Image (cartoon, rainbow, N blue to C red; front, side):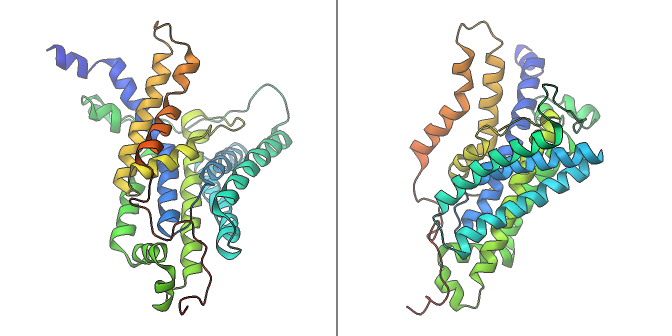
Length: 317
């Protein structure tokens, strides 16, 4: 009886629901990173794509009054961001880490500048009505599963559906096979007639779209506002999730839930009379990121050509 009371405790239900909400944006960014990394492009720019998506989605929703248009604008902005990153890393063959960091810094400056240009520098932040949670009746009251799966909004369910779509695309379609081929051995893929540049551009565009959608979740679903640098390193955490999830869609989902739970735990722990400074609690997701990178980083699961620039015509060398 006590165990049943524990499972139905409102505090536990709130923790589980928050864990899922906090996991969604980093899961979407990590899914985006999965496509680009599987094609051989190391996308450090996930953080910037999320921030651009959060900003453009918020502005579009605020000006149009439509959350759907906000989501669409965020996805398009993410695609443009991904294609710009692709131009430098794929066409020019620039260092992918340097380009990604530069794009992230550019996103911070661009969003802060245009936010003040559009909304001014006042202290009153504009708000929009965020996506409301869907009412799924008795399903929401099922112990454990109910708060985790049935107390979310429409955008969260779209994100969960994209996990399945990503798995099908990567494992069951020719596109997924081509993406994996150019990520493992682009020269061999070229000899088979594959256009390595086109496939990698498509992969980084998908990556940007998913990361932009993750950013839109922050401004259009989780908060209803936009603030400077509101992604707060979630794009970098997504890179750690990719490693922990072995670059597999289901692994990415489970790893994102782990980080979401850590984030939800630190938010609730701040309210408890533990005597631990809240700044220490804030570190919890980032400490977990460091632990993951220290314990799981390596070439295991990474495409052989990840981060290696490709040049046409070298397949015969």
